View 1 (cartoon, rainbow, N blue to C red):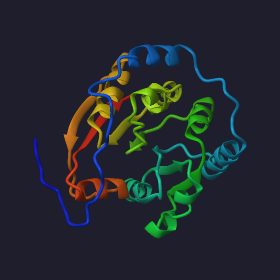
View 2: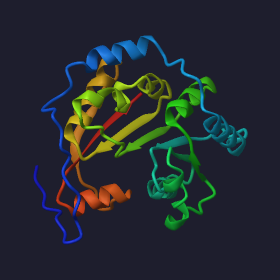
View 3: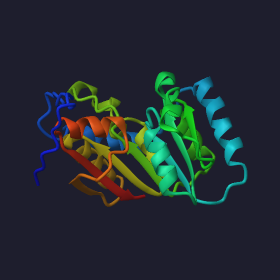
View 4: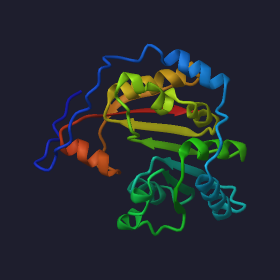
Length: 225
């Protein structure tokens, strides 16, 4: 499959990595993290953010969607518009990015944007027995150096929490190896993973728009957890 999405505004560089395929240590990392959940102390600002999320949800029993690594919140606004029957929570670690979400007119009453450490937020969600209907990870930091594989979500302890939250997980990246690795991690955890190159009519994150304008391709993996 090939497309030409280049544009004069596109200036995003392709990912440069010393990896040419799936990291050889990934199966061992996934097995270890599934067997030994993280025990690191929880950050105070994430505890406060999760408490805010719980208060906002109240006794909500309907569909719950998490937009992880939501950045400035454009994707959260889009997802909330697409799913008016659901409550949608966007989470990002950057106060600078989260602070820009009003620029994307996030005025839906079914959406909430929070600054939190996702490693901790996911753990708290599992402890609170959240069950997601959908879970989005759109263009997370790929950490493309081979030495940094454990910083990728599928190579980190957080992966064990991600799969416990259930729902339909959708991960998107402009680095094919990242999606190949995530798909393998899901399969190692016992889930089917549908991986493919894709292009939609509308980009829903600034990164997605920039990559497409630069002529880059996107890949996704979708799994029912």
